[in-house]
Each structure stands twice: as structure tokens, then as C-alpha cells.
Image (cartoon, rainbow, N blue to C red; front, side):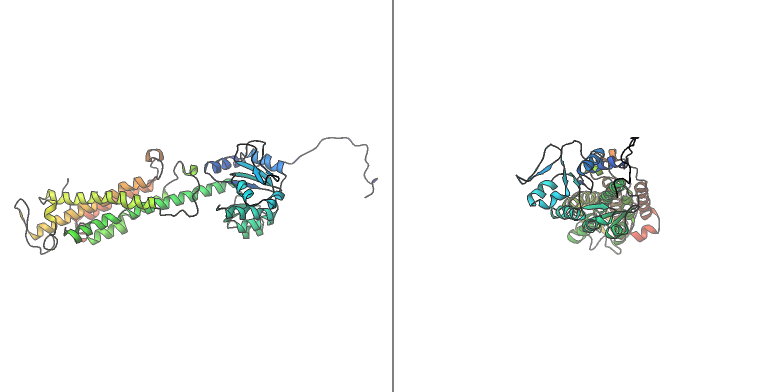
Amino acid sequence: MKSNTVPMDGWDFLGMSAIMDPPRDDTPRAIKACKEAGIKVYMVTGDHKSTATAIARQIGMIDSEEVTNLDHNRQIMRRTNSQDWAVITGPELPALNEKQWDALLEHRYIVFARTTPEHKLMIVTESQKRGECVTVTGDGVNDAPALKKADVGVAMGLAGSDVAKQAADIILLDDNFSSIVAGIEEGRLLFDNLRKTIAYTMTHMWPELVPVMLNFFFGFPLGLTPVQILSIDLITDIPPAVSLAYEGPEADIMLQPPRKKETHLVTKGLITYTYLFMSIFISVGGVVAYLLSYYLNGIRPWELAFSANEHFKVGASNFTTGSGVVLGAEQQVYMAAQAAAAFHIAVVVGQAWHLWMCLTRRVSIFVHGMANIVAILAVIIDLLLICLFTFVPGVQYVFGSAPPPWE
């Protein structure tokens, strides 16, 4: 182009215009939620360091002008302030050694500026080497390698390229970072509710096993009939267990640190709570109700020992109580049905109360509230079912139940 093509004089300056691409209004709230939840947030961009730093400061990811730079002479990452964040450019990354990567990735919030696809892949790889579970978001072809390498790749559904969508595990339909935070909360809620359901369901093992052990080892009349045991497993425990899937998040669900990859759904604490606390607690309640039923009929607990072989069944021989009362076979069968019903009621009602303990794992039920209508309906259904099994003629015959003493 010749220099005289465009005149270089006679111009009047009228002004200038600029284009601004601001972050979404809800992004600062999402970043704050990530910080409270202990989630590390890295910004990986091709923009200049000053631009990336300004945006990070605008969304609340960092909160001062100072940055952390690589000191090439001392070969360490040098922090220039007390904040847990750093800013570094892509060209600096290949020169980092293992110790420098360790120091860099100790920061919870990092801005990576002037990065290339190779740099993005390097960041993901180094983070995974240090045991991090990495989620990468992206929309372009350049993001595809990092999306593929990440534990969870999230592509943008609106602005994302086809290559990015194919490389990702999840496609975000609204291209909103806040949706990812909502997804994290939903995942935590699902994990919590699964644990609550397991804690509730596993509790009925000991209450069902104790009456069998009393019968097998000490000769007590059977405390629960086989049909009653099946009814607990297949009928009365199902509605409360299902209702826990509808439980809402606890108030502090997004204030807890992320769980580690090796965290199991069933932990030692859960097993201890289920088998050594609640399960035994409900078992004791069932045994007390069982023995009290016999006691109110004039039979002391020690008189029941080793009596099951000859008494408390159809065609049983007469049973003489400690006070001299002689009971015929029909009376013994009826008393055994009363005691079995008392044990059955104690277990079902105990599990109904246990449900309210399972609604929360950390906060008080008075703080959490009881907004789960499904749980309330499940308890009502349980109580109606146990009344059906115990008091309705015909049904009580099938279950081997009889209305126990009112006490």
C-alpha cells in the first residue's frame, strides 16, 4: 500500500469506543459458594495477565493487586501477600519443576494467563498427579484436550464447538458457571441421602436377629414370626427408606470440604452408628416389649428360658407359671402371638422414630426442619400397616399376631 493512499493529515479526533464482555451477574455468588465449599477454582485463559487478573478480581476470585510470581533465581514460588491465590502465565509453566508445581498448586485460587492448549493439558495433568479431582469447562477446539483429560469435562451447550462437546463428559445447556455449583450441591445431596438411606435400612438387622438368637440359644418362644420379619424387610421399611430420597439439603451442605476420592459410601462411623448404636437400641426396645407382654400375662422372663420346645406352640403341653397358674395350649399360643406382636410393634415404631434421626447427619432437626412431606406420610403409612397386621382379624392370623396388653 502506498503511503499516499490514505491522507495522513486533516483528521479531527471525535472519540473512541470499547467493547466490554462482563461476567454474568451470578458468577461472583457462584465463586463465593465454591470458596465456602472448599472447592479450588482456577481461571485458565488466553488473555493478558492484567486482563485476567482484573476479571478474577471482579468476580471475587482474588481481592488485591498483588500476585505470586516465579522466582527463577531461587527456584521457588514466592508469595507476595497473605492471600491463598496466585497469578502465572502459560510460558512460565514448562520451566517449573516438581517442587515449584507443588508450591503453585497449593494455592486454592490461581489465574493462568496467556495459556495455550498444551498449557491447559499440563495444568490438568499436574493437578491430577497430586490427587485432585479435576473438572474442566470449555467451549472451543483448543479446550478439547483438557476436557478429555479431566476427570469431568464440561462443555458449553450454547457457545461450545462440536469438538468440545464430543470430548466432554457433560454438556452445560445454559453455559452458566452457577449451574456447575448447583450440580455440585445436588451431587452432595445425593451422596448424603444415599448414606441416610443405608443407615436407616441396615438398622433392622439386629432387631430381627435377636429374637432368633434368644430362641436358638436360650429356648425362648420365637419373638418374631417369619412373616413378621418379611413384613419389616419388604413392607414397613420401604416407605421411610424411599422418603429419604426426597430429603432436602442440610443448611451446611455447601460449607463442608470436598470429600476425597477414596471416601466410601459405607464408612466405619456409619457401621458403628447402625449396628452398635441404633440397631441395639431398637433391639432392646423390642425385647423389653416382648418380655413385658409375657410378664403382664403372669409369666416372668426366667420362666420362658428353654420352654420353646414343649410350650407356646400348637399342641403344646400345659405350662405352669411361677404363681401356680396352669396354661393350656390355646392360651400359650395366644400369649406367644401377643408377645410377637409387641416385638413387631416395637421394631416398626422404633424405625419410625429412627427415620427422624436419619433426616440430618450434621445439623439439628430443629434447625433443619421437617419439610419432607413424604417422610411424614411414610411414618403414617407404617403406623397404619402395623395396626393392620396386629388388630385386623384374618390378617393377624397370617402374621401370627394378637393384640398385646395395652401397657
